[in-house]
Image 1 (spheres, rainbow, N blue to C red):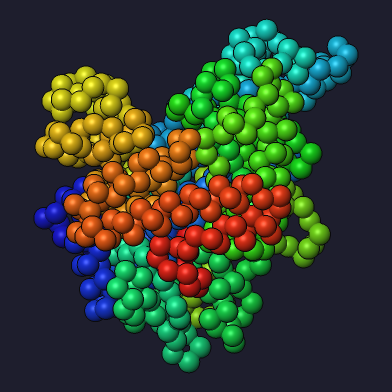
Image 2 (image 1 turned 120 degrees about the vertical axis):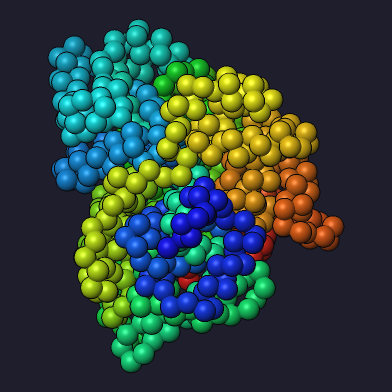
Length: 590
């Protein structure tokens, strides 16, 4: 529990001093719950447990959201294609969560994005049948979300003629569609959601320690009683004592059970690689996103600020899980699928950024199942007393997954407290709408342009004045990041001061999205950003040089991998850049 004399905003700041204090807590306290993995599920579980009054520690081997949880399609959605697979409860559950996030929990992070579902061409009777079929599916999708816009948090769908659809999306080829249906889903910066979850957990008293890798589990007879954790910044090892342990490690779940050779079978998780491209907004003319059928799954092209996100692929991956690599084949596939409907085809020269992530899919008895047909449902198992594994699911349903695993933990601890997180706004949500209405006044008080204040509000919500105050106090922080005019320099400093960032990669890749939103992939921003971080983290000139060298090597390795023809050669090329936190690949990744 946090000190009642400290505000939630202050208690939720994850700066260097807070990390040192939380490391001391790992050494001295016995926690009710130790959560391994700082992705969306782990951060959600830490928040759920802390909100029930349990003492909680969260450890993450790299950075918050460093794995799967920062590499999604950035959608909070029910999954329209799951309707065709008759996974109706999953769709309903996800749409309920979408509504909660958009209206109550995180309205500053989740906002509606319009998406066009183009209808195929063909003879009139065929077109009529297809419109009725797709229209019924989208109507059911909206129906599951609730009958009122307030409950859904999203506008309803509407049918468009071909000319109306092309007015919304002029880059569509006239012969590529006979019309369209427009619907809405939620869009989110996934990494920012995870950081906000972790900070909200910290504001309720949780110890949150990134760059802390689990290297072994503690046990007494056949009961897990904690973990051995290595601080990757100091290389010191800590014995952490806990009454229960939650492993929310996604595609690394097998690594946890491997630490317990005599444990019961855990979860069977298959890693599916999803690749996304980022191109400038000017490369495609459209006011809405697209969802397209592909031979294996679906493809999205979504507006993302001054950019478009295009994805995703859906292929098995059995190579390096820490740094899944996009190959030239993946990139060519995405371009070819989207170009089928564009009047001006995209080329490799249009691409600003590329990112690849691994989805943890629960594997059933049928090992021949295609990834696109595997369930996105989740599971919780207890392979040994006191150890709970949770995996599967999707970004949208993180809160349900977290509540389910903490329910099991609470039962074991004899705690009878239901999850309160459906009613608990995340940090930045309270007061956000009032601040948005008064943004001209906030701009006047901070001395920032109104556009900059709007940018901060959409990323930090009612925490935006904290970032604006940094800019007001130091003119050097009031300007844009070098090479990335969409971001304020203050956001780099704030990432280290309040959001747990410990390395240059953390701020260029996850606290901001400079690494995928600029043609230079953050190379032009690296040294200026590192110098800003030096003031917050106490780096020497040699530290700055080392951080910049690591980052540039990573960018070079990723670019080289994206020129390789297949997964094996792309993976080998990506290995050309070591992880800034060390090369050991053990457990505890998000």
